[in-house]
Structure formats: C-alpha cells, structure tokens
Length: 400
Image 1 (cartoon, helix red, strand yellow):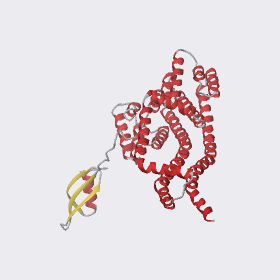
Image 2 (image 1 turned 135 degrees about the vertical axis):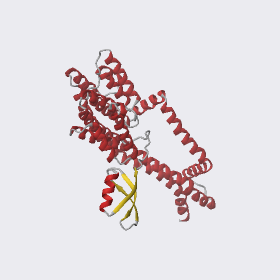
Image 3 (image 1 turned 135 degrees about the horizontal axis):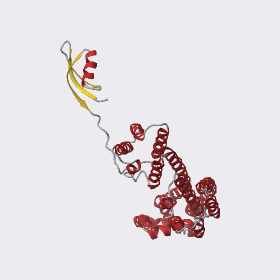
Image 4 (image 1 turned 90 degrees about the horizontal axis):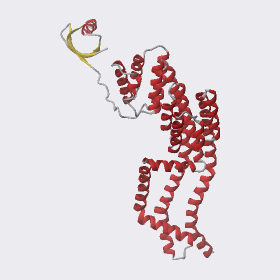
C-alpha cells in the first residue's frame, strides 16, 4: 500500500500535514474526512530500498535457511515467484534481500530459476545450480532443495569439525610465541642489566637466552618482515597449480593431520556425489563438480582420472584404488554400489561413516594434544625462566 504525504485543513480552517498509507488518493480523502480534515493536496512517497552489493558473499547459514524455507513453501503448493517474494521480504541481510528480489524479477521476466542463480556465483556454486537444473527439469524442485539443505548442513558441520581440530593447536602455539617474544623483548633485558651490575660469570643457558634477547632487540623488524614475507610467499605459491599440488601432497603425508584431511575429503566427496546422483545429475557432470569441492588437489586429480576412466566405459572403483590415497573400505563399497546399481545409497553410507569417524578423530586429537601442548609450553617457557634464575640460585649458594 503506497504512503501519501498530504496537506489539508480542518473545518475551522486550521492547516494540517501528515503521512498516511492508503490504496489511492480517493481512499486517503475518505480516511481524512472521518478525522474532520479536508484534503488539499497529496504526494505519493515511496520507501527507499537499501542498495545491495551483488558481489557480496553471503554466509552459508543464510543460504541454508533460504534453501530450507523455499523447499517448504514449494512443497506446500506456493508458486516459486510468490515464495521468493515472501522470503525476500523477511530476509534481514540487505545484500541477500536484494539478491533474492532480483532473482524473483528475473524469473518474472522469463528466466529459469537456475539461470537467475547463475548471476550470483559467489553465493550459489555449480553444485547448487546443477541440482536446481535437475530439479526444474524433473519437476522435483522441492525435493532437490530439501536435499541441498541437508547437504549444506552436513557440509558445514564437517567443516567446523576440521577447523576445530586445526585451530586449537595453532592458537596455543601462537600464544606461546607471543609470550616468548614479550619475555625476550621486555623481561630478559631487565635481568641482563641486573646480571651486568653483579659482574658474575653467567651459566651457558643464561648467556644463550641473553644473546637471543639481544638479537631480537636489534633485528626484530627484520624478523617480522621475514615472517610476513614467508606467509605471503606461501600464499602466492599455493595459488599456482604446482604449488597447491605440492602443499596438498605434503598435508596428506603429515602424521595424524594427513589422515584427518583425507577422511574429511572422502566424507565431503561422497556426500556431494551422492546428492548429485540422487537428484538426477549425470555421472560425468557430477564427477566434474565433485572434483572442484574435494578441497585437496591430489584428491581432485584422482577424481578427474576416475571421470576419464568412466567416460571410457570403465568403473569408478578401479582408478580410485590406483590413486593410492583412498581407504580400501571406500574402494570396496564403491565397487559394491556400482555392481548392485545403488551407488548413491552406498556413497551416502560412506559419507555417514567418515563424518562420524572425523568427529571421533577430532575429539581424540584434542585429548592427545592437550598433554603434548603442556609439555611444549613447559619446555619453552620453563626453559627461559630457569635460564634466567640460574645465576640467582648460584648467587644464593655463594652467599650461603
């Protein structure tokens, strides 16, 4: 309903102004007449819509909620355009609201839903779009959207589990390094001055710590520049095809974390492939999409080889076994799924197993790392403190 900015006067001739919502000017006049106001003039005012950034990436949780709600509305019998209109009005994020409204307008203009989603690749990836295409062509858009919502939810849970396993030790190590730097820059110099005034001969550990402190005080900016340079060099190297392949291969060979990486990748790949196949996407197209979401270049290469073999009429299990990175259970279950014609169901079972396995492994890793981290902190920080107090202990013995 439009809003009008109006001017009028009362029966006694007093001027009046205001803003009122009404279906038309005639309806506005009738509303004001009930209040004893005679309308003189009215101007329709439209609410300014917030501008949105079409290139802004939207959180996966927002995409998940949007997908689940859209699936529910379509299942309830609402047309796609009306469902998008309702969702567009209730979304709080200004950017996402603008995107949904733009998608709705494109559909009203004759575009397919999938084609409208392609305008926002930073929010809707190839997996999402290909599943929507399959749903539109098969008349099962609500089912496909429901599968997508389940897939996104499980994918995000898996990602959080892997991140939690990586973040904990990294955070502890970073804090320990900060403490060591603070000690070397600000605490050790105080002890050094005190020991110099004493004029006593210092033990070897104390001399080593003091030299480290002196070096850091003199060349801290060079060390900082070197660390920043190494970080940027690694990021640039990882962006290259060769660099990403070498770093991802190294990650797979790491003790414990390499096993965790391959299990998380297997869970992600099998869940994605199962979702695509269940929604009616062709196997070759599915393998191409799955390779891109593998999260590891070595796994991606193995999947592309498997895709090539499938196009030649061979099975998927054989090239996966030859890659040498997939667990034997995965290869055997894929082989059983291909022979029984229930590959999608078997892939879902593999994904369920490895998602649970990753969860258990993350819990075990956290429990194992806690004593190791305590030992690490004790050796580093304790070593520094003992080295600085050794001269004081010797002085106390001499006085005694």
